[in-house]
Length: 232
Image 1 (cartoon, rainbow, N blue to C red):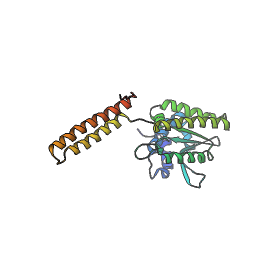
Image 2: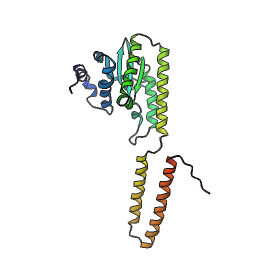
Image 3: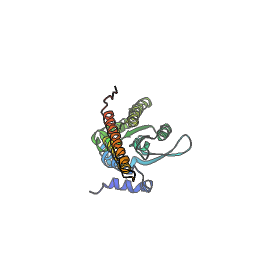
Image 4: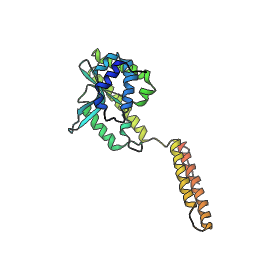
């Protein structure tokens, strides 16, 4: 299905800011096509600026996914912020989180308001996200948000974001994680049992290996379901 001419024109206008591509560009376009153009009149896309550049407190160049220019104010929009804090292993990187805090403090000196939407907000909670975004923009259009109101809303958003980060930091292994651990143990066990050592020694190692494997898997399972392990 072809894109509306307004969206197509928007992409062509700002193509230079996406020309190198980046990990979040898919979600940014999803936001435009599924949230923005349903929440607001499609013509308002002319007021949306992608990959908005600002200078941080250390003089470095920084970018935010979008800034919507509305009624003389700048409403910053950040998408899927939690992903940007993860390293290659999918874990929260403390250094990236600290850098995120520095970046946010600098950002709030360059814009008037900030909203954040996760991948789930855009893909799974699309209707709710459209409604919330529309309400936020309308409040700015009608000048019904004082600086204190904005500060309170951002503080609530920040707390929700910190909760999400803490949950990620304290996240326990998933079933897939456990399967991967078991598979690695099995590989190690098979490699050890295929050595050219004496058969008796190999059999002893086989027995010990099985025992260790069973104890390890059982311990992980009990920990996963939060059952206490008691030793008499």
